[in-house]
Length: 131
Image (cartoon, rainbow, N blue to C red; front, side, top):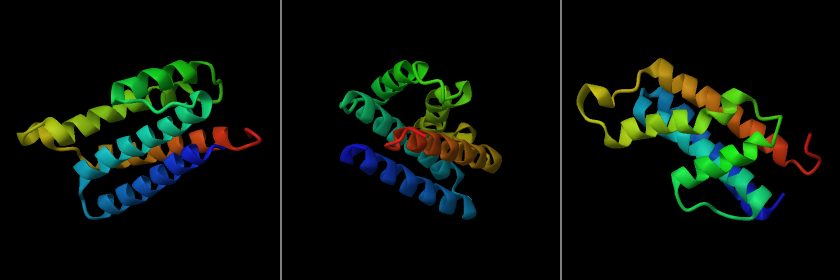
């Protein structure tokens, strides 16, 4: 695995650790944002490993990941849709106001679990043996 890919995955795992802590103190909006960010970092690892590039935008990462993931049968349909779904949590946290800016604990916890599955799937795919 390329050094940059390893660093993206390490960052993704650290971000997930932070998200889990945020959930324990009911910082659900921050946990939701961190769940997305961990997935984004894992997607960047996947993109870098396969293409040797770093995307410049979130949309660019979503597009490139989707393109590459279609060619990888070990990434299931739910995980292929994770980034855009989780981005909605980031958008709520970053841009919404009032009651629309609240992410329920259950939704944030589910995002953290799905992000964990996403990150670990990408990590497995990037192992030298690919197993």
